[in-house]
Length: 304
Image 1: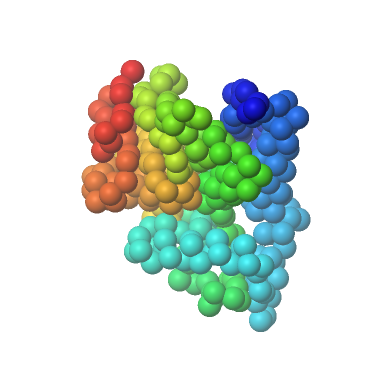
Image 2: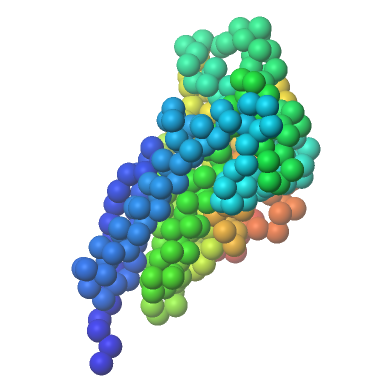
């Protein structure tokens, strides 16, 4: 006789944000195992790649890569760098993981940075300045890579993969609003996922999703207010300034990593080019301009 299953939600913190795992489980012991798997993998990737640590794997790799001869990343890091390199080429340099110095400059400034400060950080920015052949990495001195726009989404995909391998086929992992749906409810119903309103903090819309990833990006969580102006945490590597345009973008795709790359790029491109990219992507998406206008391409979204 089949044992009854129960929906279990367990929370933890990782990558500087709240996280939640939601699975159907036959027992509390089984649910705890799922929680332990999710938490361990998310923390592993946070420890390995966080740009806020001073001596983790990714920081030490960059230090070695700035020395003569460069450095050889492990297979996991090489795959992430290859993904970032591909996104850079396909976006004509808009998606760029070398903005670490620019991000640090804007994060630490109580006012708009001086032009010479931006120019100095720009001198240490640009993937085209990186030596990367798929195996060996060489960095100019002073450059800082930042995988913040990739790792959280990659972590959601990794956790979902490990949970499936462990026998969990119904549920989802939510890492600070970036989700991977492990599988639908046991009766095949999709999950109803809420999309946050970028201004009032409520729910903007809900979508139905059974598999794959959903990622959101916007100017509503990590931002700075300077002289009454909102500045996003996303920096345009071509200008050195925070992006202006869409207030939020949500995309759902086969993986959270792909969804996250599209959301980030749509934000970086600005309002009209971002909307054009989304319309041509063939993916489900929803965008808000911060002034009440919503644009979407979805057959499952309903607005609140």
